[in-house]
Image (tube, rainbow, N blue to C red; front, side, top):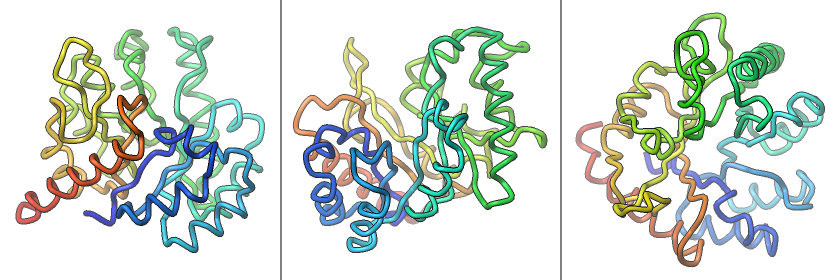
Length: 256
């Protein structure tokens, strides 16, 4: 399982702006197995691919905006090939589509793109926040509508467990229907105070044990840590998250 722990680089966006190659080298020395990309910070895909190859870090996937997926798909696929990933993830829904009709339009377009790229070996997932739970589409909340595990829906899941909890649901129960439909999952902890804001893995209220056990049994390829806002130095925060994840993995070892 430890070879499936990756960091979403949005967590380290400011550090990557300063020295993207240096960040990648430090993450590898920390013990991370992979990274999920969220932009290239003015570097070329070739330059970053070289550093990834040098360090041995794997690409756990690429977050790509809905706008880019719709307007620059061939460029996105070329970039993904250079960065050695076939896992694309749409990170959010544009603000203007966050209504019943908009979610239907969004899903239809995303599903078309997902089906279009399948023959090339690519998958397209959707990463959630909490707002999707606030709109009902076809009798279910918008997230369940977008991720419906049916044969004609090619959109896969990248469930963010923090945002599921923020919406008042149990993440371990919520993910149960997405067996073999979730190549990557976002791990993020929640502070045990009134703020209920982001926390390092293992320092908050979310129980990751059943999530990781389910993931090992149901086809999750990468467990990706994301911390949108860090209270301290972000590199220290991601190091603490990895240390605690390794402890959890060691403890769960006999149950997997």
